[in-house]
Length: 102
Image (cartoon, rainbow, N blue to C red; front, top):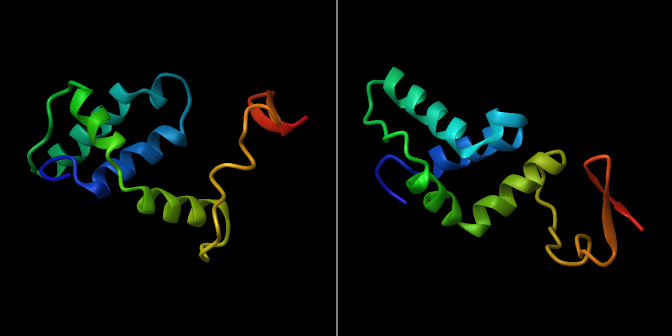
């Protein structure tokens, strides 16, 4: 990812989506935050179309997302992340917006 949608910008915008709800969690709101941030710093900002942001978000390096999840999930120290066992649909269900064991 280069140009406007650098890895750092996309990670920041993605985290801004994760930490919000409703319309503020939408891709359109994330792109609006990127535009505002870059405009304020007099840097080239993207158009309001969400397509390029969504494509850039889909290309985020898996390692960066795992490292970020380790930092957010704990005390910042590296932790093993098991991508498969804990989140299988047949062993968990949603209750009050959270995943819970059956």
